[in-house]
Amino acid sequence: MIAANNPNRTSWIEVQKGSDFPIQNIPFGSASVSDKPIFCVSRIGDTVINLEAMEELGYFSEIELPANTFSHDTLNVFLSLNKVIWRAVRDRIAELFDSSNETLQANEAHKGQILLSIEDVSMEMPVQVGDYTDFYSSRQHAHNVGCMFRDPNNALLPNWLHIPVGYHGRASSIILSGQDIHRPKGQRKAKDETIPSFGPSQRMDFELEMAFITGQGKPMGDSISVAEATDYIFGMSVFNDWSARDIQAWEYVPLGPFLGKNFASSMSPWIVTLDALEPFRCPGETQDPKVLPYLEYTGDKNIDIKLEVQIETDTMPAHTISRSNYKYMYWNMEQQLAHHTVNGCNINAGDMMASGTISGNDESAYGSMLELSWAGSKPVPMADGSERKFLNDGDTVIMKAHCSNDQYHIGFGEVRSKLLPAK
Ligand code: CA
Image (cartoon, rainbow, N blue to C red; front, side, top):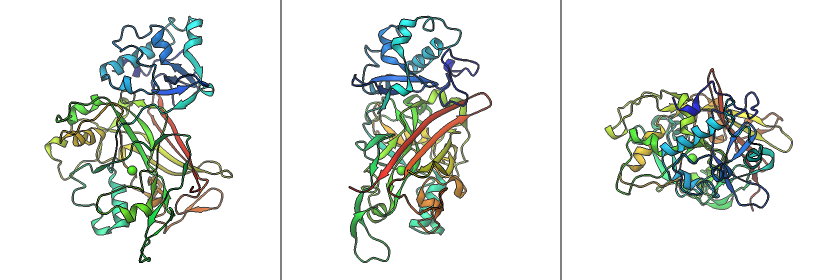
């Protein structure tokens, strides 16, 4: 067992019951305090742990870290190391914050330098994303979109069951939870129109996704196998891949998503490590037809991550519109990464790869307004008596994710962003 995952461990830091951040989580992120430089952090309960200070005070001296690994705006230097070091750092944090360990617990001066309240910090982008890839790996989502955009009798295109379909997205517009976005403008052409028009998107949507962040890959020309993939995946965040459906539907043939997608994608600030998620691995759907050998895998590669989407307005408290689960993915992360690199494409530390919209089998588990309202034909009721076909200006979209078993609960926090009117 990974030492930091010990379910019996308790911390000398107070953790409220039901917290997303027990000592078994130990996520990574970046934070700032007033106008000082940004530094790398972890978290237990509502206490933020300054990793830069821990490193400077020698708490990681037994681990082969390059100097000042955590004195950066992002985790990219840490991500460029390897799984052995990632695990050693997380295990060391678990050890030092264990109830039975006095080393830091009894050092008031060091605690003053290392510990902060979540209330006193601003979370920052945890990673500088070099490249962003978006997959399309939930079968139910692909089926639903195929039904609406094409033909219900041939909803899945012929390649879908053989390839983890994906496209290269845009990294520059990946933003942190809490940053609001403006409704995008663009070209769209409704079915009953003969020529396109220009204006604010009339079909603004979210996509409920999980994203994984990679470490440094192999040299260009080499491939990462399914079996090796776990070693190159650092962790995961909750991800809202905003989508303008009217712009998307008009532009996507023949080269795929472009301006309907690249105006914004929002991520949650904490990266939960793949190590922390290992206890929640579960089997995936049987892949039939059989996949090509380079995509074959053994063991449980899906993860049981419970997902929830809420809409909140200035006058309506958060109202849940969908509950889904990452375990519904047809293609798993390891297959996605193996496929991504099978042609020799290289990946870098800090690349981000999103799952694609995650939809379950019934409509309470659909991961987009497009599906929940079935392209606007079935308005979705809200708690305040209003309805939504797509998103309204002033809607805040909140996505949450957590894992739980008999022993503990591990959460991702949330990604939250408000849709403002078009500029
Ligand atoms: Ca997407």
